[in-house]
Amino acid sequence: MHASAGLLRHGDPTKKVDPLRLPAPQVRALAATQVRTVKNVLDRIEGRRSTAFS
Image (cartoon, rainbow, N blue to C red):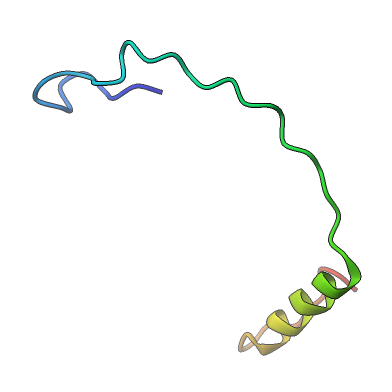
């Protein structure tokens, strides 16, 4: 992604830089302790209940 024309006074400093070719992200599930932590945090947020991980 490059800067829009006219955005920078001296032009786009990234126009000669190739985009990074990163590997696709890996899908990972939460461990039981992480799910419990998420539930606890959601329970503490005022007015919200943890229903996403029931």
